[in-house]
Amino acid sequence: MARLIGISGSTRKASFNSALLRAAAALVPTGSTLEIASIAGIPLYDGDVESAPGVPQIVTELKDRIAASDGLVLVTPEYNNSLPGVFKNAIDWLSRPGSDVPRVFGGKPVALFGATPGIGGTRLAQAAWGPVLRALGTQPWNGASLYVGGAEKVFDASGTLVDEKVKQLLTKLMAGFVSFIDEK
Ligand code: FNR
Image 1: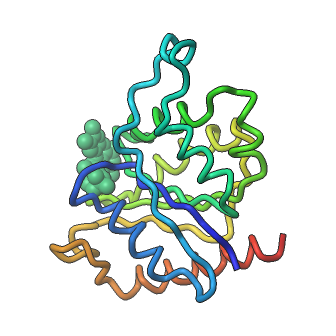
Image 2: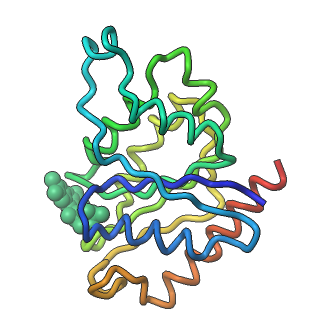
């Protein structure tokens, strides 16, 4: 039984990655939960703001929710063959002050996947997250991969996951991630 928190790296209303995260929340094994958080409203990182008035309330609240979770699910778009700046900006704020990183991210199991209308399935974005997750001291879970390409056919117009193969892979992935956490 795990209490997960999930974040999509897109703030777009019709985001495929947010749709994939919602699907993951619906497919999480019985007894476990996946609460959806958002990066919307997180300002651009500014060291002067961090000095005074300090880490924004919206960031502090999300840090506390991540710290309280048993595992973190990141669903990433791919921008220009890498991770999206808006998503990285949010994680950068969440990593401040650096002295709080062990509490928020230290040893935190992380599942990472993503969706794109393109053919690559966010492989390059997922690869780019590797060094970031390592820098934060997380425990990336590598038990399963999910690279969702051709997203326009995988979701219907309302953002519901309609591709049976992806649904099966996502179900297995969520079950595997929860088992990994349960066995810890
Ligand atoms: C993209 N997109 C994109 N897709 C991809 O597979 N590889 C890439 O390198 C890029 N590069 C890229 C750069 C920028 C600036 C944008 C805005 C978009 C397309 C991207 O996958 C598509 O817009 C997705 O729909 C974004 O994810 P959400 O918002 O649907 O979750």
